Length: 480
Image 1 (tube, rainbow, N blue to C red):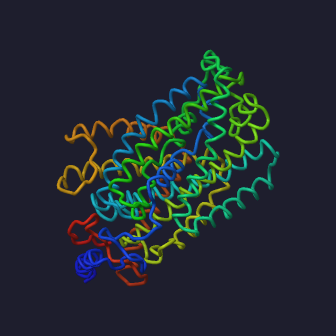
Image 2: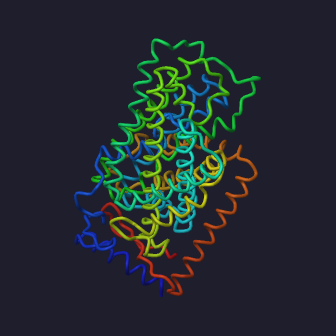
């Protein structure tokens, strides 16, 4: 009976979209089922939301220098944005344009492999996102600690207070967060641009070849740091239902973001490592501000510290929004209760995301990074599989933007390079990360089973599953 109801619901939901009536919490919808109105994300806010989802500048990249030295760090931030970022951006652009609903990659996996895959990928990516967000209040505290030394209980209180305060901003709505990201991006980039320009006469290329003490490089720390600084290209796809004309806006915004992000890392790191004589051991979190002080004086150091704080604020807000809208999208698919699908601001999803972030904010910085990377890697491998499966099994799916490769082997080869990075990140994770990831995966499977039970028993209210995104005819929904 439940399955029959869902088969009936899906065409009705599609008809509601075509009539322009509400399908998401009472707002007026367009032909894709997304809200109309002036609060839609446009090109520039989306560029900076992607920028903060992925990077936010060179702040937080210092541990890569400590782990492997300046030369390998510069090579990493030169190669990785293109070897990893471009394939992931292309996949995101195609699928976000073809299936432009809130939830992003959850929608793609559900379309390709069914609701269990969508729920599992959603669990991995969501937990990765909120665990990752927990790193930013700690990073802010580290940068502030270079100006006003704090430790112990004071630092713990600062991290908790920042987490709560920054979470409140997300309740103002995505449009405010988007334009706030533009302002934060311009202000936080300014000291890096100035430091790069001032460092040019002081740069000595021989300084880029300095090796770590004893010549023993920590490749696990290096890869985790570089990967952590350059992942989450697909996170903005969870907000695709809030983007103005996503079929055009997403590909353009991703292309601009790739160049902006690569430059925002490479140029400041070249300046700071080439214009100072600090050994790699000195490059702890927050050292970029010290390097700016050496290059331009105390005023530039303080400005760089302020830029790092603002950058971390931008990353916190962008990624918390992504996590909240992912839960909204999962609720629209019927994978979570309808209470998570409250628009315009999904306040329940924001509150849950904030609580999870606060709970893990007391982990050590490197543990946060390693755990977030592992969960993200699992989810992205499944995402690549969904991309290839949809190309093979649904070639007639309307794709306003297509990756400019026609054959399936060529697409598989494109995905192979970033998949190798993902496999390496998983392989070098410690046993604690393996154990935690296994437990969280079991939690994801259990969550899917419990949601099926709650729906079958009608213990909770669920949205009818949606099909027919992007103007296609609605297909019978999967049972969950």
